[in-house]
Image 1 (cartoon, rainbow, N blue to C red):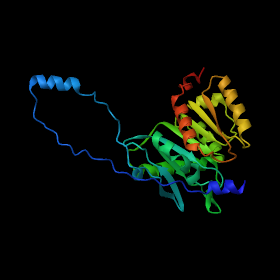
Image 2: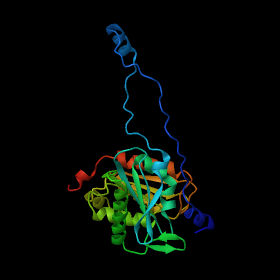
Image 3: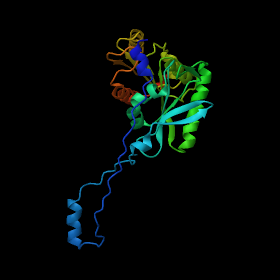
Image 4: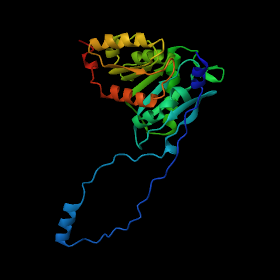
Length: 276
């Protein structure tokens, strides 16, 4: 790993600026108009558009950190919109903190739902890393999700959840999704040439997979072969190339992750054919 890559792995994500919404101070005349005037006013009035849930201020979105285990935090980003939001979870890689693995695409994450990123169980210098089994990583992930859910009751919606992983975290993400059919219907795997079996994915209820690979990295060739193989069998899979990147994110990762999220969510449900 180059010095530049090590530096990138330890960079903290940018903080957010907070702007309070403007208030409308215009007075409203509540007295009813004459019948004809009311008809004219109704004809001239623009159609009412439902703007959806209110947007949260940046300071309400985060990112934040909470302890979920001894000497370990969960890094998380709330949804940009109020109310219940789709769960997105991420498992970082070796010597790769959540502030990097998740912190470089907080905009994509908060626009799609609520992003939960636990720290690994060991240390690599100052950065967290993983030195436990995928089963234990799965348990840690669930504890982290429960911690965020406890801090913001009712916000996490697990329907249509997305599980993402970087490097080792991507290998763990596949293992976890296959062991819990229906729990993680969408996978986004970054910088990991993970062996993927179409039949097992369908059986586990995984509807779609997006792969991200660095153009100059060692994982891209294998990821391309995997994408071509599964696509030839009609399985929804997308390969996104991170231009100029090795085993790290490209500078446009926020936009690329937004595209990957949009792809997996728009994919048709192929899992209904799993038993055929």
